[in-house]
Image (cartoon, rainbow, N blue to C red; front, top):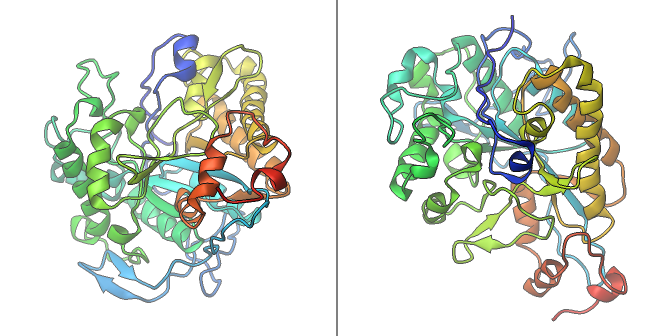
Length: 426
């Protein structure tokens, strides 16, 4: 079975796409293919591998049911590093965050593929779950999107089988130490013919969208009637501390809402530079933008996301010329590696990559992310973390240290070396 194609949201020239706020949506599949992972035989929270080579679903520990039993409190999340303050003169780690928009358990097998890869290379990631992926298409009337008709969505709802697969994979991801954020719900972009996208929303609209996204994830048992799926092993209301908006739009109106909710970060900015992050919204929310990175063969830069690279390679078509796939795969890989190298060999700013579980242009962008992760994982000082884990590290550092780090520009190494640059507070 094949997965439903994601909706294309960009039609722009290469120069516009290079740094524009564009991102594709993640969408659904037909359900019961490779994405449906059987229960594993391993004990505790360790994932095992099934006969297909994909990691099997981790055993969900018993916990205290929450609400209708869709979620359960099983205690602190496993496999979390303890954040440590930099010592005077210590070189900062090179943080890399691989994040995934949509994060649905469709039948193309990409979610389990990257869970397996993360396990192999001791990486943690951030999975931005679209709330309606916990809501079967037969219950679309439960979604009341702001400024749109009841049940409207610019990404497909999932089949029952794909919803079950999504729930199982989200549980497995959390137990392995990955973060579950949100990609909100209906994915309305300003590229719609009526231009009625999330860029038009108010803070109140965002509050409604967030309430519904949380509701679908915390009330899936009531909404679906499923009795053969374990509860998600965490309290989503407490775990959720950040997200990424559709098409990287609407952040200005979103920030006041998430600041009131106490969220820790937002990853919706576009065109950010490879410098150390700072807080916005009166110092309440960390801003983690997709970053402008070198684009081999061009004088302009590109955003660190698969769809933005695609937009410059195949003019927004997700099915470009197959004769160019090898060339484009190499270019995408080298773009990510160039962004990593620039930070790693200079200011050590955290490097952010955004991606989708998608087979665009023959799946070359999935291959590019895999090759990038494999190439950088074993390098000294590299930490492959989630946004949540990055927040925790940043918040234990001295403010004087963070100010110094933020003073370094793109590609700028500290004068005199790290021992001198961070040798004293001030």
